Structures are given as C-alpha cells and as structure tokens.
Length: 391
Image 1 (cartoon, rainbow, N blue to C red):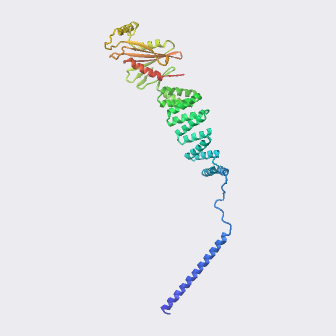
Image 2: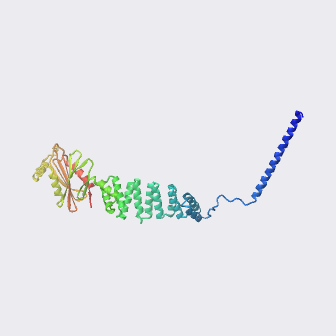
Image 3: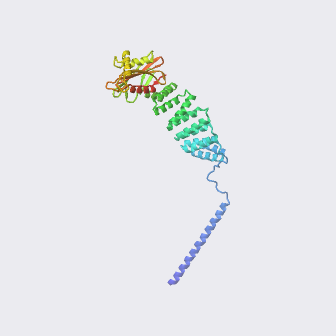
C-alpha cells in the first residue's frame, strides 16, 4: 500500500469517528431534555422557608413577642412590619422604641417616642421622650420638652422639677433657677429641689443663698451624703458664732476667735450679748479698741465746736468723730463708726461695729484698722449682706 492510499484510509476512519461522536451527543442531549420535561410535570420543590409570614399586623406583633427572648433583631423587624400595617398601634410602637433602646439605637427610639408624643400628647409620652433624650445626652432638648409638658399639664409639678433639673445639667442656670423656685412654691418639702437650687447659687457665686438652700435640703432629707458634704464645704469657708455664719472674704484668714487680713493690718471680732440695745452695744465694742480718752463726751463736744469754727477755706484737718446710723433693710441693725479723723493721716485709727438683734440676742461684728472708717463700713456691710442666720 502506497502512501497516498494510506493517507486516504486514515481520513475515512477519522470522519467515521467524528460522525459517531456527534450522534452520541445528540442522543444524550435528547435524553436530558426529555427528563427535564418529565420533572416539570411533577409537583414543584418546597420553598426554602417553611414558615408563612402573617397577613395582618396582630400576627406580626404576636410573632415578635414569641421570638423576642431569643432573637431581638428579628422581633424588631416584625414589629416594624406590623406597624407598617397598623401605624396607630401606640402600645406596640412604644414597645418597639423600648427595643431600640435595648440595642442602644437611641436615635430610632427617640423618633418613635416623638411620633407617639406628637400624636397622643399624653403625660406618659412626655416622660418617655424626656427620659430617652436625656439618655442620649440631648439635655437641652429634654429640658425644653419638660417645660412644654408642664405648660400642657400644670397640675403635674414633676415636669417643672424635671425641666429645672435638666436646665441645670445643660448649663442654663437662670432657667433652671426659675423653674425650681416655682416648683418649691408648689412642693415646699421636696429636699432634692433645694439641693439643686443650692448648687445653682454656688455656681453663680452667691454663697449665702447656696448655704441657706443646702441647709434647707438637709432639714428635709436626713443623712444625705451629697447634702452633708455641701454644707461642710461651705462651713469650712465660714466663721460661725452661735446662730450666725459669716463667709470669710478673700484676703482674710481665721485667727482663733477672729478674722485677720493677710497683711495683718485689719481685724474683725465677733461678739454675742444676751440682751441690750444694739446701738449702745455697737458703741461699746467700737470704743473698746480705740485710744482711751479721745472719745469721751467732753472730747466729742470739743470736736464738734472745732468743726463749727472752721472757715470754709480752711484746708481739711483730721478731727476725731463718732457716728451711728441704721443699716438699710435691717430694722434692728445699727452701725457705729469711730475714727481719729475723717481724712487719712499718719496716725489714723478707725473702728466700725455693726450690732443686730436676732433670737433675743445681740450679735456684733467689729472691724479695726489703721485706715479710714469708710473702708471698714464697706467691709462689714458686705459681710453682713452675705451672713447666714441659722434657723
């Protein structure tokens, strides 16, 4: 067999094999196609999820409660779906809001509480909204809502208290003070409100008002650590004598039973008399620290004559004096000023005493310095204005 014949036979065999392969492919494809048609005539396969979703809102809500313990996220989705069908199911919407809170989704919780509040305006809805806003640190917004709640429900002072407390936390001290003062007018035995008022006055640098409110809070709430600490903190800044507390001013220190200026140039002493006329007592203590003999009745008369005889064009000269006057706003308080001169001079000495009747006792604060009397008058009046008279 020559090469040409061999080549021809090989070509024939290859074509036979190719034809057989094509026939086999067609056969197999037809079998598969026929099998698929038969399977399509059978019942369709079951769905992947065999649980059928509810068709009404109550079904969603029931399923949500059923799985809540083991699947919080799933329960939230079911509540959301139920509320799409029944948006006015307010108890369920509140339930959803509480679940958002559990997941710390406070923005979503507030949104739900706002929806409830805007629609129902109930007391409960205000409380939920205020609480959730405070929890989310939206303190000012919570305070505003509490104030609005009291406007709607003026017979509910709790909203007034909440607004005051929250305004205080947000730094709105004047608004807080206004709300809480109105609250204690309605509820005069609520010690917590007095404590917050004391804290406000402390921040406003009004120590007298702060201490008075702390003391009142302590009377209403016994053995409260925060209240007791506040009172002790303020008492450390005061000089106490019987029922009187005097705040130690800046630049002064306690020196046994008196106050002494840091440079030791001024002193303040305190006295309590069981009885007597306040003006006479003030004169007594003011004179006791001044040079002996300068302020006798005869000496005072001579000083008065000297003043009368001075010509108008005569340069001012230091003339000793003693004067007494009432303290404005304090009917029983008398102030007596004594000095070796009305103008400053090298050897000037002055003393000022304020005496006041309180609880059948006469309390006296006496200032002494080598300075003009006006300085002592100013210091004592400021001390007196900030003094706390204990109940």
